[in-house]
View (cartoon, rainbow, N blue to C red):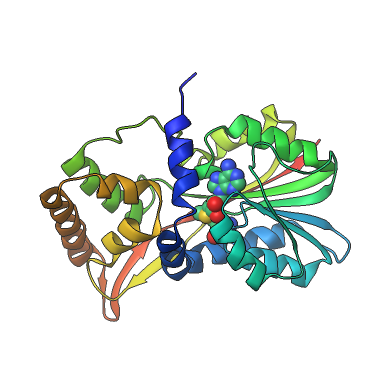
Length: 272
Ligand SMILES: C[S@@+](CC[C@H](N)C(=O)[O-])C[C@H]1O[C@@H](n2cnc3c(N)ncnc32)[C@H](O)[C@@H]1O
């Protein structure tokens, strides 16, 4: 089996970094929260539904879950994120912990939201089996993911420029976009005892005011791509920025600035 230990360590350190968290909340969270809102709706939450917001991050989806239910928990391994979540969703039961070894008893929840958490976890089998363990029979899970370069202008622009100038990632990493493909998501979920209910693409877009805005977003507000960019020599970083900015200028100009598609998927499944 591939060893994703270095990837896992990088993710853990990255999400603790206050600069990344501030940039993530400013630039990416407005999109993730739009997808998360739809994912939350798909969970059919009632006031007595026990809900877990897994990889809750900044806590905005946790807060919205608290508007629907009185029993909401949030789990994340980043103290930096959890400090924010505690301010945003003080009524939730927030805990620090790993999605692959959750600090909850079996059958504790009726619904689990994992909004853009699954692409970041190295061992998806472990996380899905933990979600199945903490859910009650018939419980539902909603997972969101980014669509990969084949269907996403934002990721196509970034990956083409970065791989063109810097080559492929230097450390082994799991397929970031795996759950955006319905067949792959269904296979993983059924192996963990879930039945797929729906798999849907959400057409999110990034509105930028500068052609290098897309580079700035990936270089500052992400963990993996940021580190890949930061590990390059300055001329390579400049070349990546220039290539991305040129593509945005050429392909994505609109009267108000620049508009780049960055679609996501929502996968909903229920525990058999
Ligand atoms: C892309 S952010 C998503 C944040 C939030 N759910 C949202 O709606 O925008 C990924 C979050 O997953 C957390 N995370 C990543 N791997 C994790 C793991 N193995 N266990 C717990 N949290 C994890 C990170 O700390 C980060 O807060």
